[in-house]
Length: 266
Image 1 (cartoon, rainbow, N blue to C red):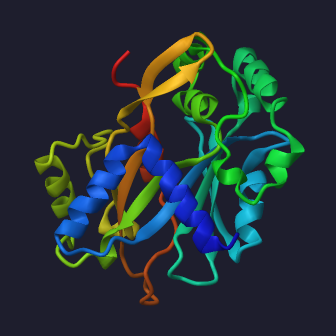
Image 2 (cartoon, rainbow, N blue to C red):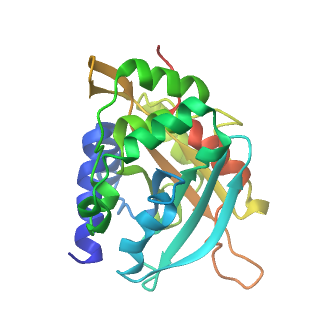
């Protein structure tokens, strides 16, 4: 499997959990746009068997290299981003929950889930979209969500793209995040308003917005339940003093973007 095949398979898997993304993609193409991905995000647990590196190694073998790291103290998260040797490929943003900072319940539940991850999973080039290897009840999901929405999302969906991101810089008719947001709202999509609909400023060199994740049916041990799946993000980058587009991320903005998978309906 080469990097293009992996990214295409990730997009297909992502659209299954976020049908709205495919619809939004098609809305832009109907406007004459060619939609390119700025970055793809993945989530995991910090653990000797797992962590960021377990997901990153497959991408590194396909030409990606680590570029920067980020901390989110309030949400107890750590993240890194990776860039491909071909700048046309999307960046990869991988975050992990700092499990040792969580309650004994979360720590024990993560330890239980990890026991279901085989070496075959870890060594697969498509580990980044292998899904959920463990069984989990809806009751446990809810209890995890009460402490960490991030933990509950990973517990329910496992390893797969959390979101794709439209590169606004490459759109022809939507030159600003404001225009993108108005276009989305005119078609009925709900945006993440935590910290404002637009996260970041031109001074930060990065502006972002995102839809709120729509609910999807998930099979738990105690039945099927509707919970937030994936969301679609939109990013505009600004040039640095050197004249090249900023390629990193802004922690204070990403902190709010994480909330795009928070539950709205209980």
